Image (cartoon, rainbow, N blue to C red):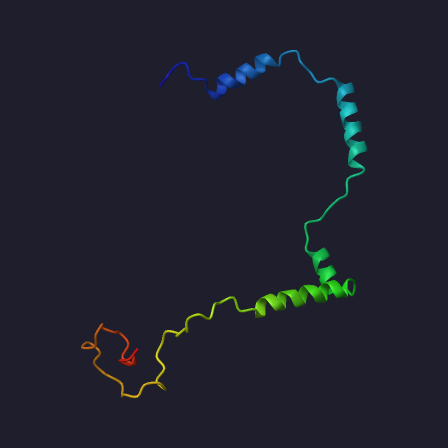
Length: 122
């Protein structure tokens, strides 16, 4: 281990030597406390809560704004953003479209389908 390293005790001794004979000025402390008291009197205390938001939502004020907001959200949720350029065929087995009976052994089917309900045309 390096002997030039400063340990916790060494730092504590340096701080103790540095602060010998120094004490805070009481008048400065009183001025700072007075300034803080004057400035803090204008501060508004805020509570971390959703009560204000819930009050706004469930109150009778601003009804047109709330109706417009709900209408906009419903409008966005109803819109379909998918392009209809290609037909979407959901994966799965629809037995109503099969015109052939189910194949019990699908190992011989190419390209090796794992679902026995698939039609050979699909």
